Amino acid sequence: MTIIENMSNADYHSHDSVSKSQLDIINRSPFHLRYAAPREATRGMEMGTAIHTAILEPERFANEYMLLKGVDDRRSSAYKEAVKIYGSERVLTGPESDKVSGMQESVLSNHYAMEILGHPNCRKELSVFATDPVTGLAVRCRFDAIAGLRAIDLKKTQDIRASEFARSVINYRYHVQAAFYTDVWLWETGENLERFEFLAVEEQCPNASKIWRFPADVLEYGRRQYRADLNRYAECLNSGEWPAINQESEVLDMPGWFINQIESEMDDSEFTFTEE
Image (cartoon, rainbow, N blue to C red; front, top):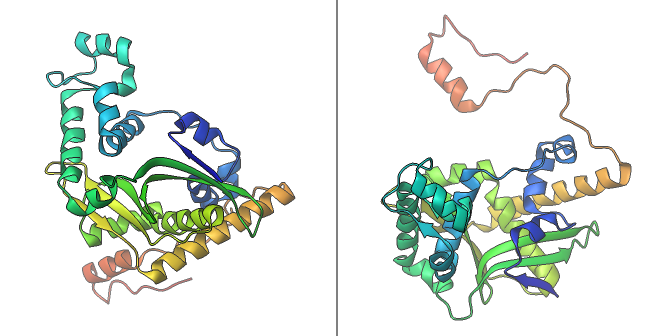
């Protein structure tokens, strides 16, 4: 069984296996995956790591991070001196500290989230490696937290309300992640997860938090999507061809809400929507 706790980010991301983030890219086009530029660390990514550490591993966060409560500018001498000791990724300015602390406190007060995160047998930052039984590809995923057969994934968001978080689900393919992680766990352990849930926490004060899970049909749709992506990945490996998006001229299919907006703002005599 290949399950590793506290695997470094560098080791995890450099592992020769397929991750959900790679499936997202190949869903855009195989060309984008094959010729993707090396990913460079950004402040947003460093903040994401800080948030995850603060919520999932609060003791480690307290020991390894420096919170400069009275410093607002990363150009200040105090910030630069702290960076020499802790590294830029582990030094937070006052506003950054407030954001992370607010999100941390929100989760600590969320009884439903702490049923998992506070469970004595909860394992965090769990890297799981398995073999896809259909394509034979090595695959991987990283669970934020799992207690028994209940898994939870932390997501920072702007709005935890159902209608708004659903937009994030669609844009970032969280339903694909839920299905993929659930199945990777099954392939490696032989166990079916009871639940795979998302802990959504708002970035802005008051940092409301909420746990969401998907109905069975949404999970099955995510499963169909990751299966198509994995199959395509295998086909590209076998053929050595990584096609781009179709470059032919096509009529742009505008979203329904935009067409409705146009129709509501223009008289029928001025505008009639037709497709070429």
